[in-house]
Image (cartoon, rainbow, N blue to C red; front, side, top):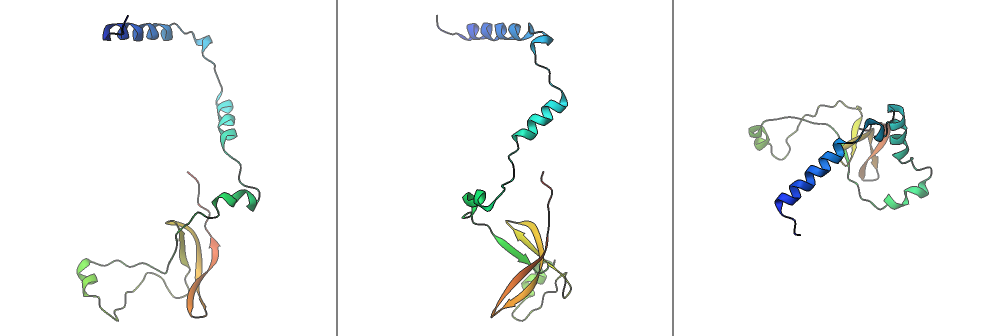
Length: 130
């Protein structure tokens, strides 16, 4: 006998009846602390050594060092030319922000290495995990 929409409807009603017949004793009860401990067991532990992190060593990340920021209107931006100076919101000697994949991870200072600029991390920012 082929399933027609009527037969399917009857089967769904039978399932609903079976679910309605369940008693409270048939449903396992767990306390909040039991559920919390199970949740905590599912969280993987932090790696204990650098050898455990080898799988992610070759993953590329983008590192940015922000010296400062400035806001201006488009007409002001269009007036800028060679030699123009844009004032930033930081003072001399103030720490710069270091971002990894657009997430603030550290603050640091600008250093000169031979003929290039570099950064030295002076503070690691510990972000809360959501």
